[in-house]
Length: 345
Image 1 (cartoon, rainbow, N blue to C red):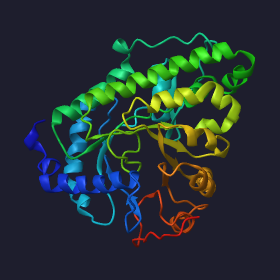
Image 2: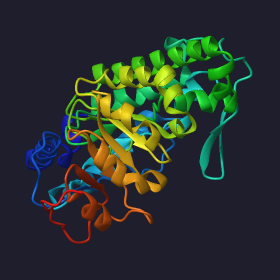
Image 3: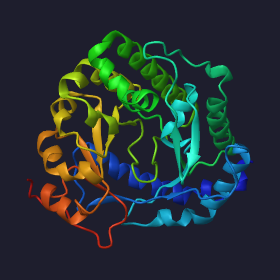
């Protein structure tokens, strides 16, 4: 693949349009409010080849698809980034790297718990790890294409608690009480691995194209990372602060500007900790977490953004009523552009 293979993916007009949207998003993070609600609804790959077998051909196929659809970026009302993202083993990407058996059933990936006891987890040999090699091959094929327009979305690198629960189930929660030194050993090893993988991508993907997972809707300004906080709903504020908060902060701090935490459950007990976490610059809420939008908006810092996936419990219209559009980014295109107001909750 060469630079001239994808004309639209190197088109200066489209690249400039992408940059206009990024500049506006950057201003929102800086506290400058737009006149209308900022919404993101991009285009992501949809090829037919198997990336697990031939990632290089998969990248080429999907870049061709992106090239054919790149014109949607010219939308003035909605940010529609053009993205390529290989969801390698879904949310079990790290589990697979750490030796768990991962399998596909009924349309999604699952994993078996590790047989080894908590406290004896060993770091993977990344130089010879087939899963990590597959991920790197995909990234290399993308950079070698020299297509400048697409954003490159990461696989799900998740978070320490998410991976630990995947690997051990409820036993890791029990050991936070019963065998804390063993739990800490595995937590720290997992987080070191997550930080290492994020740093590799930072070093190998151009900054202007690198985005964390769900790149087409959770798009952030450059230099921001992301972690998945789903399983934090299972722990108390005390346990989160004692075992996990510093690890989440360290992971987000791999990125020069900090980053986002994805939430989909009942996590309001951790708001005071997240308010004080300087590396945390955005939360992404959907489903059950969206019910608590009022709390997140009222109790988080003024420089912490809220990304909302509209759902049955929290529509975009209701979110604007609550926030006045302040610090709010809607995932998905709005049928009618919604104006921000000066009314804050």
